[in-house]
Amino acid sequence: MSFLRYLGALAASLPLLANAQGLEKKEVNIAVGGKTSLYYLPLTIAEQLGYFKNEGLTVNIADFAGGSQALRAVVGGSADVVSGAYEHTLNMQPKGQYLQCFVQQGRAPQIAIGISKEKAKTYKSPKDLKGLKVGVSAPGSSTHMIVNYFISRDGLKPSDISVVGVGLSAAAITALKSGQIDAVSNTDPVMTKLEQDGDVKIIADTRTLKGTEQVLGGPMPAGCLYAPVDFIKKNPNTVQALTNAIVRADKWIQGAGPSDIIKAVPESYLLGDRAVYVDAFIAAKGALSPDGMIPEAGAETARRALASVDPEIANAKIDLAAIWTNEYVKRANAKYPKG
Image (cartoon, rainbow, N blue to C red; front, side, top):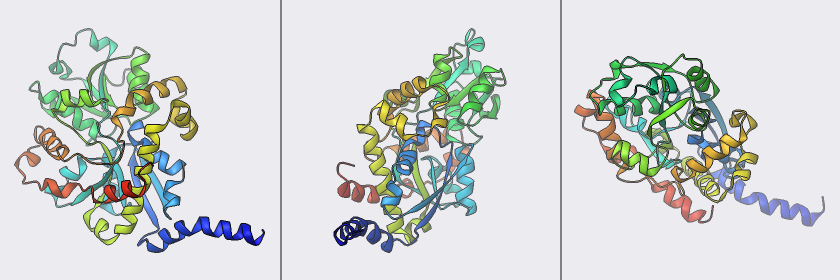
């Protein structure tokens, strides 16, 4: 290598080296429940496009069947951070676990509930789900919470349905098509695939901002990065680096076309049908965060939804301001105004 080329390479590496030297923790373990879902697309983009590496981070991602299992990983100490549902920061507070969301990936839950074509023939309202087997990603996950809230509006209790964990990928599709479950609460591309194949009738839909307002009555943050408050306090530079990467991914997605996405995600994410994935991406794009910012009103929407089905939440004094922060997101947007 010539001396000039060496100097050029050295100059290009300086920002990364500077970032790495300021990090309290350069290797971070992230737990996620259903990484192939569009719900977590920003995480995948940050990984695939090297945004974590650009910030000096080595990120190890452990993929679980559902968000509740990813939550257990961070509570148990095997993960530092979770890429998961916003409401987990709220429902763990009464249990003495203080978690905080620090960057948003989705601004709507992106979860739809569909009933099988056979059961759809007699379906009229949520109360008709009574006694049915409903597939969710994993018991206790956001897909489960949405179902519980949906049926509660018609006077049903969580115990009035049978919940079956089916994951967030091809296994969920197989479970519905084979009759193992009568209805399903899931994310895309699973729900778009089932819908286009004519296997389900959509009866509730939070894949759009409008649909979220109709189902939950307000803005509801969805996929985010959250971590124990102690981890965030001890590792502010590391948290900032993670936030920078996700904000860049959020912005890249908003400017990306279907062909860009297809090239960026692993082939296994496509469920064997590129067209379905593209359709699902186009539909979900508006529900993905454009800048990582968390809406202030989202905490109350989450509390209200959870309180309707969880007496512990209903009776607890929740510090809503403690479950989220835009401190790191604001700095990330200032650093990367265009992504």
